[in-house]
Amino acid sequence: MSMKKISILVDVQNIYYTTRQAYGRHFDYNKFWATATSGRKVMNAVAYAIDRGDEKQRKFQNILKAIGFEVKLKPYIQRSDGSAKGDWDVGIALDAMEYAELSDTIVLLSGDGDFDLLAQRVRAKKNCRVEVYGVEMLTAASLVASADLFIPIESSLLMR
Image 1: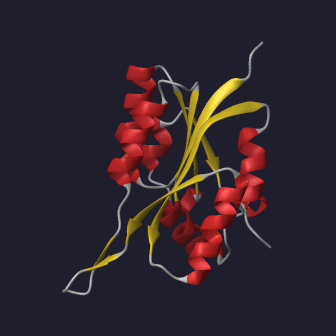
Image 2 (image 1 turned 60 degrees about the vertical axis):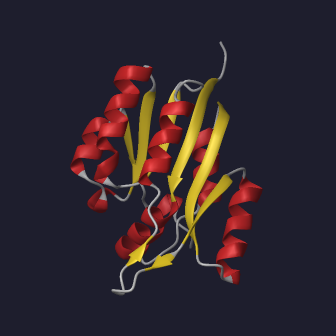
């Protein structure tokens, strides 16, 4: 039997803020990688992040690359009204539709309810499983319902 093929898509900002809000801790990408990829072939693994250009962030991005992720960056935009923009939703959705052609499973790390339609479409049109990792109390119920499998981010996937 051949290995199942997966593509991993990480909404870095969502995972950072939800794990920090719920647990006051950082997500452990190494533990996640070991768990999610066990016995499976990684076709694509992309971490979508915002580039603020600081050294700490650059080190984090290098860690992600060393694990096996491609890191896609968008510039951080501060609007004149004080609000900020840095959203990867469309990029994640486009890549997911493309990667679903090459994969048996899309693994999405995000709690953002905007991805519920994406999960439904990938399952229906691409005949591809969708697994969602998210902080349970901060993940949209519609996203959980749209996935084949929801894996709650708990302490086993967090840094000490």
